[in-house]
Length: 175
Image (spheres, helix red, strand yellow):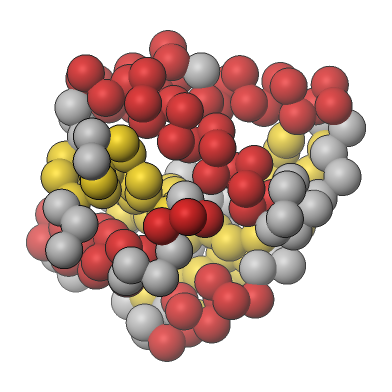
């Protein structure tokens, strides 16, 4: 079984590469093929996946990140923290699953399932009695089905900014 562990400060470079790669695999390459304008994509990738952004996330005590590592290489991750979704019932006291991605080559190893369970357990224990939130791209029907099966319900939508481009996203909540 592939081990999953909390991300560490010395994972910054590898985690930045993993986040960028899995984003591109999912939304650009053989995944959904969203036609982001290059300038907008460049802004988003620097803001989201450059090493300083990853280091800041790892240093933030309100956030938790877990990684799956195989043969010294990071192949999957999940990140959670205070809810920041634009929904009238959402609050920073609630938890949110920010990201959960698995490299294409590692899919089928049940890492997504394990990372989702770990994330949900952590959010339930650290914020008892509060809802758990997540945002999911409107075109990602497979992920939506997974979340629905885990007790989430679609409760809204919003526009996720990628440079000056906007993705249509759904807001899910589990009480």
